[in-house]
Image (cartoon, rainbow, N blue to C red; front, side, top):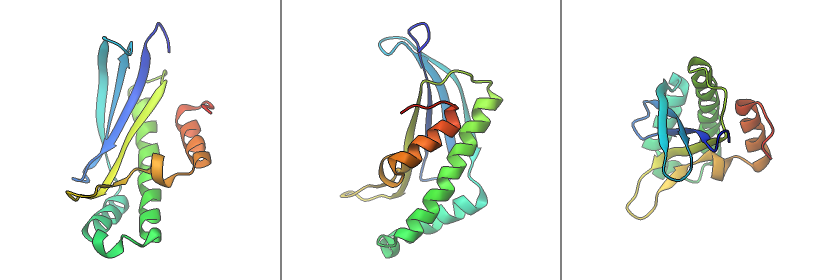
Amino acid sequence: MSNNKLHAIGIMSGTSLDGIDISYVSSDGKSRFTHNCSSLFKFRDSTRKSLQYLVNNFSKNKNSISNISDCENLVSEDYVNAIRKFKKSKNIKKVDLIALHGQTIYHSSKINHQFNYVIVLILPKKLTVLLYLILGKRIF
């Protein structure tokens, strides 16, 4: 944090599968908040097709770890590439926090399965490496 400000990147992608929404904000963590910039980064065709297949066939494939794992790898790569492009295109130098929403792959009134690779599918060691690549510094 610099000058009592937290600089954060927030990332999400929704069920429309159009791409990855990224915003850069600053806050004192209490009452002041500034939206600095935002961008949308399209999924690669291979990622979008893999996600669409998973979403359309989830009830048939919910026990298939390989389908989820393959798709998770594609989404992870797209997220990393999008964050790097975003930081470069907006000349962002300071990032204290990255928050990821995750990718929803199935909606139900009873259950909501999140394709949230930060919490569910990436092991802590892999997450540490991923964030190191994005931020350029060790965080754990």
